[in-house]
Length: 191
Picture 1 (cartoon, rainbow, N blue to C red):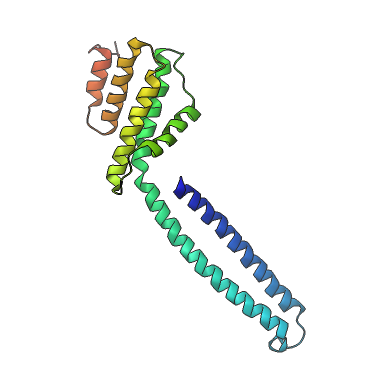
Picture 2: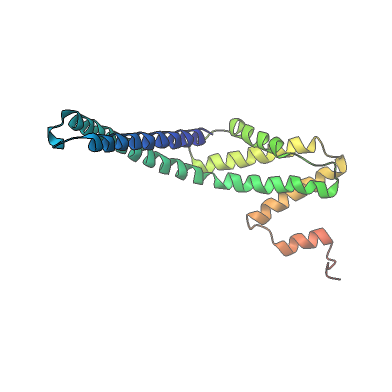
């Protein structure tokens, strides 16, 4: 969330800088248009040009820093893609519960709320891999606890199986054929 806020601030700052540059260019054009005679002898034109150059250099320096910061933010965001991937797997596990019983329907805001609280609950770590593991484990447990409160007892085991298998399939630790066999009991669905 802090990275997203920083990126949004940089985007706004970049837009403001570009607007200032446009204003400066317009001032220069106005001075050039209204200047009479030799422009090098017009002191107000020289002052406008000097201040414009200073402002343009200042804005260029700010933009360079902003671009570097934006690259760092994008790199940091990319590091958290595995958390988003895991979150999408969990979301679709929850969405599939409606196939078991139409009563099991959960809203996206509910899911997002749980996802965001995970960042506060999960144990902090300076090591990115450890942080991702902590986030994934905490989110999986949070989802499991919150969803199981609303499930019938007979569906809790099925939900546990669904979470486990989808996670294993997504990480390449289980075979799709074995999963299909477990779901169908070995009976071909083509018959």
